[in-house]
Amino acid sequence: MSNYSPIITVMTNAAIKAARRMVRDFGEVEQLQVSQKGPADFVSNADLKAEKTLIYELSNARPAFGFLVEEQGIIEGSDKANRWIVDPLDGTTNFLHGIPHFAISIAHQKEGSIVAAVIYDPVKDEMFWAERNRGAWMNNRRLRVSSRGNLSHSVLATGIPHFGRGKPAEFLDIAETLMPQVAGIRRMGAASLDLAYVAAGRYEAYWETGLKAWDIAAGLLMVSEAGGFVTDYAGRDKVLNSGEVLATNDKLQLTMQKLIMKSRHAVAEKAAEQAAEKNKSV
Image 1 (cartoon, one colour):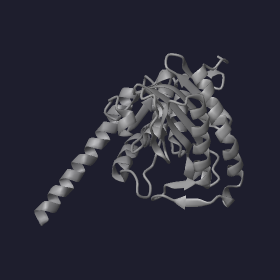
Image 2 (image 1 turned 180 degrees about the vertical axis):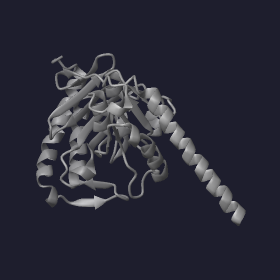
Image 3 (image 1 turned 90 degrees about the horizontal axis):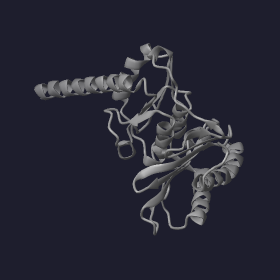
Image 4 (image 1 turned 135 degrees about the horizontal axis):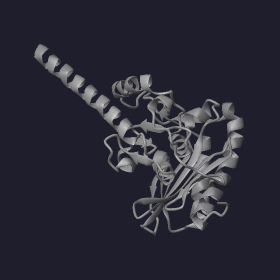
């Protein structure tokens, strides 16, 4: 399919314009001015310039739409039914370290549902896009989730808790459960691209928690339109609000869900036992 709809055209054009300056900045990454806004959570001039460009371009095309963006938060629009959910630079830490794996993520949310999505990797020039009931695509190629149903043949993606973020004990228990059963586990550092890669069949599954709406909004639609499943760890459709994601193909969804929940329960039980022992000793 080579013909973008009007809304996808708006989104892809905005992403391409924001990416031009971002790629130039990436080539001069050592000269970027960087401020620290939290533990291991950086914002650069590239973030801010990309966000400004995206807001300008998207507002010109749809002036009534509101925004939910990473740096500025909620920007109210006169059209309360429609808004853009935007991550101007997903994979900022990769970007700042000269690692060429980052993306621009844009989702169109209508009446609470994601109806169109774009994830653009400017280094590889891979434009992932999806529309409700029109499928998921990478440039002009239709995307389908992987058909592998055996964990021993599967490559999984995840996010590893790091300084000041995440639940290390829970992650380690889940990873320890999965590692002996799979062909590999990857931690690439850009949630939007992890989801796009599940949609493209490059990964069989992806799990992570502690994510924000702008990290995952576009990717959720991408996976579902490619024939996959996206839920929280317990199988509920509350991902955008909870920030807890399990994205898989249709064959592995229940298997992954059971293994992750078993690990989660084991960690909770161990914590409860430790708390009880501590109380006894007081």
